[in-house]
Image (cartoon, rainbow, N blue to C red; front, side, top):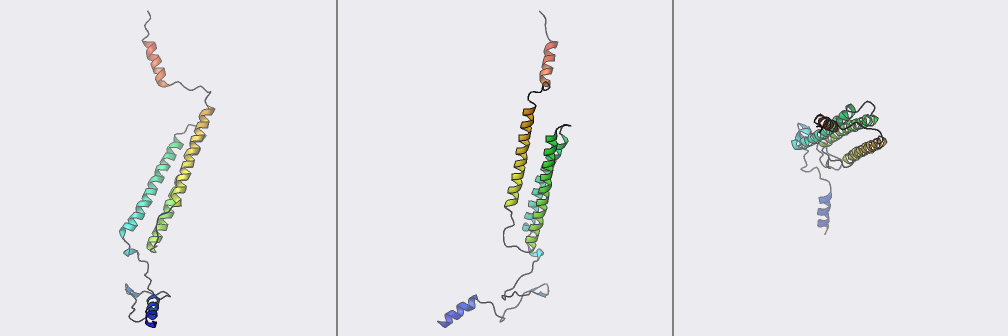
Length: 180
């Protein structure tokens, strides 16, 4: 019975120095941890390229979306009429969101790079960042829509310029009027 207990305890105990050789990495001895097990140093050259490329691809996709939103913001801001404060304000809002997305993309790229180098054992994805960014963009579009509807309602009783197609059709009809 004592032999079985001794084998079980030796199975769960830390390794002894008998036959235990530390692995040499590039001419250096890897230090052992307090529990006697070996710890490998972080070595970026031994990480598979697909991990690095996936991180870069994610970063580039965030940049692409951020540039798309910033170009939309620039078009909205530059295409606004002289007195259109709603369009200029929403253009600035989208520009701030785009800059925030750029900062988030860079921060997450650096965080993933650090996790890859230190061989983080968990997932590299983030759950809350994209949800927050989507919620902010949704709120900005909703505010833009509400402000435009309110602006249209305020201008409802003002005369609007005629439709150019109606003006042209009236001119064509008046040119071909045949008096009987």
